Length: 471
Ligand SMILES: Cc1cc2nc3c(=O)[nH]c(=O)nc-3n(C[C@H](O)[C@H](O)[C@H](O)COP(=O)(O)OP(=O)(O)OC[C@H]3O[C@@H](n4cnc5c(N)ncnc54)[C@H](O)[C@@H]3O)c2cc1C
Ligand SMILES: NC(=O)c1ccc[n+]([C@@H]2O[C@H](COP(=O)([O-])OP(=O)(O)OC[C@H]3O[C@@H](n4cnc5c(N)ncnc54)[C@H](O)[C@@H]3O)[C@@H](O)[C@H]2O)c1
Image (cartoon, rainbow, N blue to C red; front, side, top):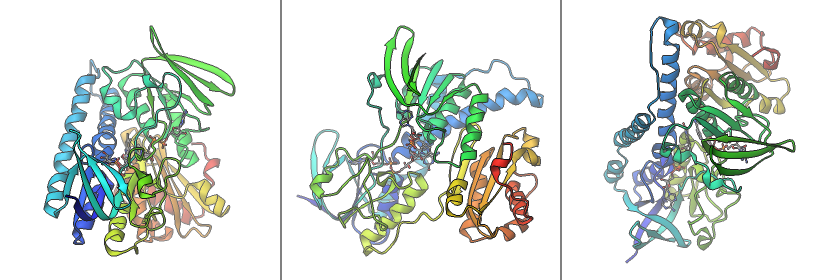
C-alpha cells in the first residue's frame, strides 16, 4: 500500500521542520522524511556544535586575559575529550529544548525515518536503515535536504577531516591546516587558535571571508595574523595531502610556486553543495545546476509541484533563511503558488575572534549602484564600553544612500558584532531612517551605542569613505 500525503517534506532540518509545521498548520496531510536526526546540520553537526566550540574558545581567551583584571589563573589547559563531551551533551540539550518530534506529533505530521528518493514526479521510495523500502505519494514535495561538505578532488584528500568530523579527532591537533576561509573555516581557525593549535589557513580567493564587506574581511584577516595564524590567500590550488612519519604533508601552489607544510590535521571547509546525489531528481524531471536545485521567485523548481527551501537551493544558506523560505514554500504547496521568497534583509555573522556580522549591501555593492553613497565607520576604540571591557578591536560601518536618509547596509567587527547588526536590521526592517536612528537613546555603556554614534556622524555630514580611515 502507498501512503499518500498532500505535502511530503524531505529533510527535517530548520527548513524541513518549518515547512512541515507550516503545511500542517494550514490543514494539509503532511509527511516528513528524515534520513538522519531531526534538527539537520544546524543542530547536530553545524551551528550548535560550532557555537559551543566558539564559546569554549572564548572562555580560553577570557581566562588568558583574566590576569589583566587582577584575577590570577594558573594551569590553563584544554581537555579535548571534556570539551568534545560538552559539545555533544549541549547538542542533546538543544534537541530536547526544541522537541521537534513532539512538535511534529502535536501538529499531526507523520515522520518517516529513512532516505527518500524519487521514483516518479509524485512518488518517492523511503529506504530505512534496515533496508526496508516504503513507497509514498504526494501532491506536492518540499525538498529541504540541505547540503554537505565538499572534499577537494586531490590526491590524499581522504586524509582530510571534514567540518562535520572535527569532534571525531582523537586529540587536539598541535598543528592544523584549515582549507577554505568561508564562515566555517574562519570559525574553526579561531577555535583551534584559542585552543593552542598552530593554525594555517589557505584560501583561493584574494581575501578571507570573501562574501563580506572588504573592511570586515581585512580586519579579521589582520587579527588572525596578529594571533599567530598563518593566512595564505590567492592559493592557486591545493595539490596533495600525503601521510608522512611526522603527520600529513599538505602541498599547494601560489603564483606558480610550490609550498608544503606538515601538520597533524587538515580540515577542508571548501564549500557546501546540496545533498542531491541520491535523490533521484531525474525520475521527477527536476533539474539541478552546479550542486544546487535552482528555484524561481516562489521557491518552485522547474517542476511546478516540487519546491526547494534552505541550503539545497543555494540562495542564502543560513538557518534564518531556511526557515523563512520553507514557510513560503509550504504555503505555496498548500494554497497555490502566491508567496514570493522572502529575504529582503538577512543579517548573519560568525563567531570568530573578533566576531563579524553584516546585513544588506556591502560598501562595494552599494558603490556599484551609486558611487556617491555614503559610509561612516565608528571604531570600537572610540566608545566607552569596548574600552571598559578591553575589547577595542572592531568597528561598526553604516552605508546609506547619497541623501543620508536610508540605510543600505551595516557591517561590524568586534565584540557583540552579531547583536549590534541585529539591532540595525530591526531598524532597517521597520523603515527607520538615519535621522530617526540618530535620535534613538542607547543604554550606557553598550556596544550598540556604536549605532547611534554612526547615525549621528552620518547626519552631521562627517561621513567619510571608510578606506580613508586607518582600521
Ligand atoms: C559548521 C557550520 C556552522 C554553521 N553555523 C551557522 C550559524 O551559526 N548560523 C546560521 O544561520 N547558519 C549556520 N550554518 C548553516 C546552517 O547549518 C544551514 O544553513 C541550515 O542547517 C540549513 O538548513 P536546511 O534545513 O536547509 O538543511 P540541513 O540543516 O542540512 O537539514 C537537511 C536535512 O535533510 C536530511 N536529508 C538529506 N537528504 C535526505 C533524503 N534524501 N531523505 C531524507 N532526509 C534527507 C538530512 O539528514 C538533514 O537532516 C552552519 C553550517 C555549518 C556547516
Ligand atoms: N555563522 C554562520 O552563519 C555560518 C557558519 C558556517 C557556515 N555557514 C554557511 O554554510 C555554508 C557553507 O559554509 P562554508 O564556509 O563551509 O563554505 P563556503 O562555500 O561559504 O566557503 C568555502 C570557502 O572555501 C574556499 N575554497 C574553495 N576551494 C578551495 C581550495 N581548493 N583551496 C582553498 N580554498 C578553497 C572558497 O573560496 C570559500 O571561501 C555557507 O553558505 C555559510 O554561509 C554559516
